[in-house]
Image (cartoon, rainbow, N blue to C red):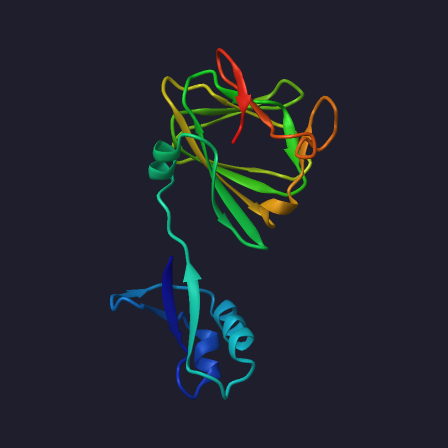
Length: 195
């Protein structure tokens, strides 16, 4: 985790509200990042309560390399989890590996980093993600992920809310399979728990 200090443009709330803010890494390096000033202003007011408080706000930022995580862990790995968002890395080692048709109660985005992912839908339709492509799947939409490439597949997913509140609804039973145990991921040869 990297901690950033956000300066608040001394004496001028209008300056802060109308311009991008400069972020300074605690380790001494400088890096200009354009953030919506309204978001920064809101964070500052939440942290200090009023304009008379401290001149800096500390914001935690988590930086990961999805490919490195996938190749090291070789399984589904949660990489971020807060009350408002969680993210994970999927690793499907073999062509033909897939999960089962299911849906979730929240919207999510998948980004393909390596390999090829085909998303299958209940009506028989499908969509292909190649490296660098992303897909939004709205909550309640059933889908199945399959590694349709010639090698391993690495995806990163993001979903609103904490992972503790996510429902995984099986297409056939229409029940939340989290209450029945771990969801299952099928490989070409065996069926195994999707960690």
